[in-house]
Image 1 (cartoon, helix red, strand yellow):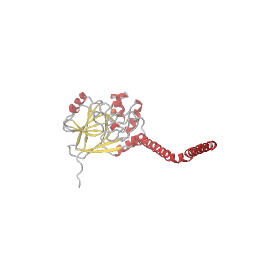
Image 2 (cartoon, helix red, strand yellow):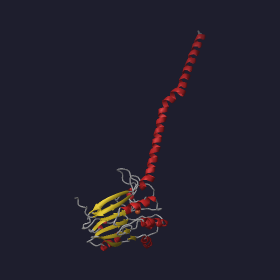
Image 3 (cartoon, helix red, strand yellow):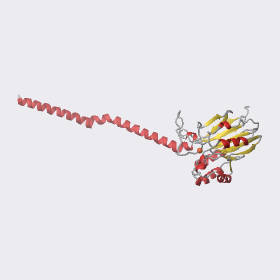
Image 4 (cartoon, rainbow, N blue to C red):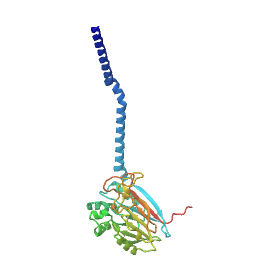
Length: 312
Ligand SMILES: [Fe+2]
């Protein structure tokens, strides 16, 4: 009995050990790979998907959107009779080299056949890039002239004032430093008022004294946030840049960063002062700080002043 018991015990033990061994073998070499394959495949699939998404977003931010130029067109009443006047705004080049993208920007700008081109600051970030800026300017054409104001980067790069005025003049661009210039286009008498960075109240008041009420007065200011309460009622339109539209945006979320003197202005058309003066903020052509854009494409803006043509 004892022997048998021992034998039985040993047999059972042997059996249990063998059974456990069979089970372990199955899990290791048969069952486990069959159960884990889907998990590994799913993980790899998700990993590849994430890598693809990140690559697509990076390509969009770095290469596609910074050069996906958009044209915005606005029609505004001028209050004067005569053929409409076409004013093209270009802003915030932040040029490092005059590359193929900027050549296309210039080609598209000139192809719109504007009467006037206005430039609202931040052309370069280093003095040595002035040559490229002038090359860009020389590609622009507007029958009644090209007018510009300075931005913060002209001051930060120490290429501003009379020195910059001389450079710009060589490329046919008239720099307005708290100055007024009058332009006659057919029946239209326009004044362009150039408010210098950072659009201080004293300079604005001086410009308002220089302005003429019975004209269409176009005010250029690099920054959109200044003392709008000093704007006279006869200022017909204010054009600004500076914000880049936020440059990197997410839907329904305010911009992550806006520079000083941006105020509440991001991009597009606003109305300011007690006179409800239209003020437009252009998203710019270039980029600053980071060479990326997301959900915020670069922009040219074409304003047509005058009544729209009657439909027949
Ligand atoms: Fe700026």
